[in-house]
Image (cartoon, rainbow, N blue to C red; front, side, top):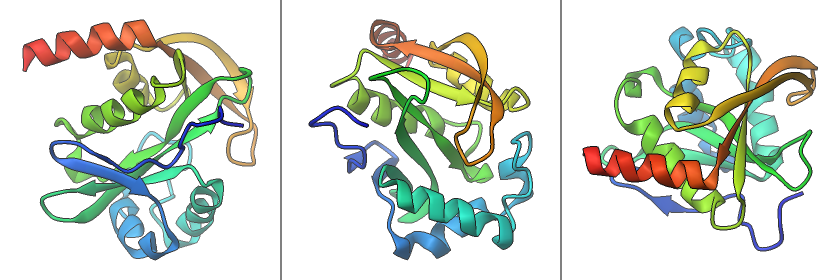
Length: 187
């Protein structure tokens, strides 16, 4: 359960991307963003680029009521999504996950901008945010470590209907604010 007053599907604008609540009408756009094997390389669901595997995933995202679509503002197209969810093993904590961005947007500032929007929103009400990442998903582990998150422990979590090992990364609000300040100074 989210804290009272926390909006798990905010509409937020960044410099190059925007996020807004995911809707059923986003199926075609989100599937297009997800429809390449590279997007899921290293992820435990490496075949999620197929329609057969993506349909149930999309249903899970939509049903959650806490997924946001990521929009390229210049092109006005969906390039991915992310989601807030209560940390399953940490009472009164918030997690960010179920994130993917089309591979054409890797290696730039898109992931940082997405996490910046989501983290700034989260830290209005929470003092820490958790990320749960499969041990095989090295790309995502490196991405959250770049934000200042620390791998605190490994456990088995049931995030998508199947129990699986997860590295649990914690990002404290003060660590994020320091990291963000250093990032802004470098730009």
